[in-house]
Image 1 (tube, one colour):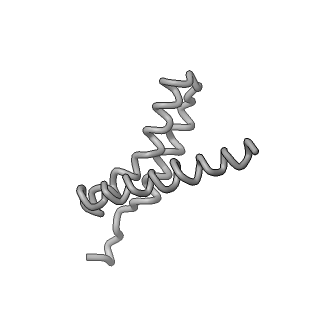
Image 2 (cartoon, rainbow, N blue to C red; image 1 turned 60 degrees about the vertical axis):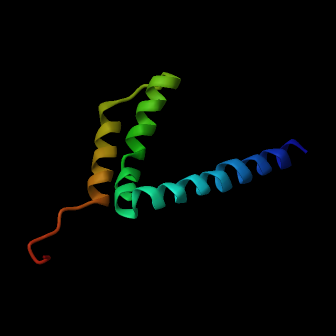
Length: 81
């Protein structure tokens, strides 16, 4: 029974309520602006894990996050206008 309660909790709060707030934010902030904010989620997660959970943060972790955000938003090459 606790497994089903856990599944129900995750389904309702994490998925349904989270999507409602996410799509309301997209409507209010615009797709382009909110989409750019989503690229900062890994950094916020790393900062919150260090601040709230006392997780150790190695410099390599920051480097991987930076490289990942650079790969998600690359600079256009000379062939594109």
